[in-house]
Image 1 (cartoon, rainbow, N blue to C red):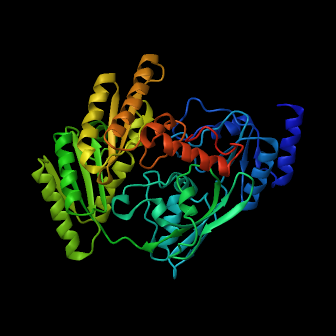
Image 2 (image 1 turned 90 degrees about the vertical axis):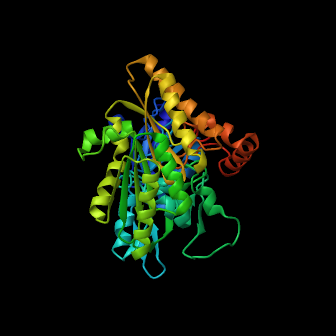
Length: 458
């Protein structure tokens, strides 16, 4: 680091509270990658821990003056390399921004971005309310990261994703300007829908420093159906039959590899011989719940399920949901992972899942598949040994082939994890040249010097 840059960092320290700027390599190393473990992660010159919107403004004004790139970061649980550090830049973490205020009358919460998804749920529950979006990593992912990637989750087949619950944002732009978009009004169509523009923008257009989220009454007790199948095609047939008839509160899929990995880790008595398992849930009131459970169980039986189990015990049902949530960590015990997040229109789901099986065979790599099956969003988990160069090469080829397959089926390269750095090469193939040009024009208008999360998305 040059003497002049030492002076610039000293200037940054003067703008912030003591201890906000971290340069110890042992500390900054922990902020280089998110959960995707991007092998091309750079080395930041510093990590900055902001506590207030004013802190973020100061950092962005300083970065603009000195031409320093800024990578925003929440809890680091992202799965697409969206929070990967860049050489010579800084990582700005919002993990210490953790205030929350709940208004039970309006049914909203005003939340700083560092609060975890689970903590928002807990604060809402104290008022008999519920914040629905529930990524599998809800106990470790931050609400700011959820907004930045427009995160989904297991219950989103019925209740929707993050953007459906965001009423307002405070965002710091690249030049340090702080803007308020939307707010506590339940209906508001004044001006352009700029709030929606920043949700899912992955820190490339601005840094979210406050979020106003909509809450709903607490989820009713749920009943659960668990069905095992001897073929993936039978399971996908059941999925389409269920979604044709109703909107389940949850409809999750696990293939044989993911079932085995979870059983190894949790010893729940899952059927290792099954080629697929569905976990479906209804939380409709009273007799409607019983009717929906019967419809879902019958759909599984008619599709050829080898075993169908139902329970109205919420704790027993939640144990199966917990097994599904643990699938990624369980499969990760088998080796390093390349994590996919491809989705397709529901009628194409059987072709996607069977196509992934063919890709796995072609490139001779294990691909475990889990899915938010009710909305066509799959998570193929490609397992490889990083010490085996040829296997890593084949894993990367499979990674691209799966995204190509999803696009060919009218689908998407990401349903909820974001494009980040790992998927940006495939984005033009999905959205087209004109949309890419429009995206770049928006990026240039808001961040003309390209200092916000460079290399992500674009």
